[in-house]
Length: 114
Length: 118
Image (cartoon, rainbow over all chains, first blue to last red; front, side, top):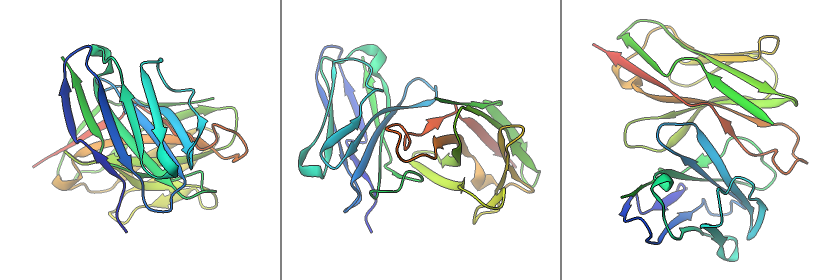
């Protein structure tokens, strides 16, 4: 089966611009997660979708971040406007419904805000 | 809430030497435990997991980890490393109870960079 796909793999934008990251989960996986790793720190949870609904968005850093999951399939994470501290690697992961362990992660999007 | 501490940020070793990457966790509830690995320019891959049963779990490439409940540790070991094991290793936990809204959320440590030198 195809894995979790994220694109772009890299993005360099200027402070104040908007960037949209996309994640395509494994087909049939209703759970979709976003995580972020900033500046060599720990990987931190951002939010969790179950199908198209936000199950837990307590990790979203502020209202400049907007996540959507259209029709319970792919998800987008928009940062608007981007700030320098948003630089990092954004990971997406997915798992089947009912499994609360051992997701499959994508390769990540490396975002650099200059 | 959970927290994970990886005690070493960098571990340099020579090829064929043994290695131990240390991980301690804190949690008020029962947890699942994981080790993930990120090879250069790749995504996170699940290396091994402890869900229940035997406290010693093994991966297909020779790593093993032992869950020690009394010491709240889940250290990763390999008796003889290869150059290809060079990667960053992440310890992570998630709460067992699927009823909690945060039950499936992973809490990671800061990672340990393992560098295997010839």
